[in-house]
Length: 220
Image 1 (cartoon, helix red, strand yellow):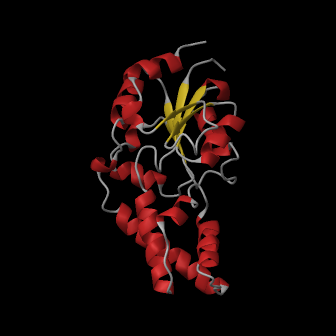
Image 2: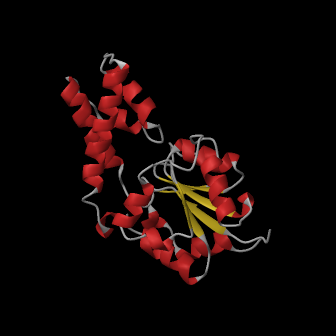
């Protein structure tokens, strides 16, 4: 396999902020069941699967549901979330992201999406970035959740790049861990106290210069 640099992006919290839609949908679910759901609790669901998220929320609300009702609530939550996604357009792309994608395209550096979201393809189409990615790996393609590096390793394979030549942009602790376990360079997007395991950390893409990207992607 020829050695070339490649880039892998997580979706939620990196390219778009769908966390707010998840928050609204979970909050509605909790309120409909008769208890509240806070932003602090929502933070604890980052990178956590839908099933595990609902289990946590029910525990916080001190509530038990039958298996049938559990599945019904989970489906309702997803429908609510998708109704917010339905309204998305290019304006949802986070600031600073387009300039990085433009640089990668102009310099023929392959890039992929590596997301746990089963709605990743839908979202990329909504924000008109679907055609830009050289590969897309989402929740429908993987069996192991982050911090297992499976999603990133599949993405690297699709980009025909060695893991150690890949740079991963992530906003969750589990995602940064997955990149590190996969022997990739991890760039944390968010709070440095939370993402301290990352090789480099920025609050958001507006802080990332093209010069930094160039240096990162230089052949060793």
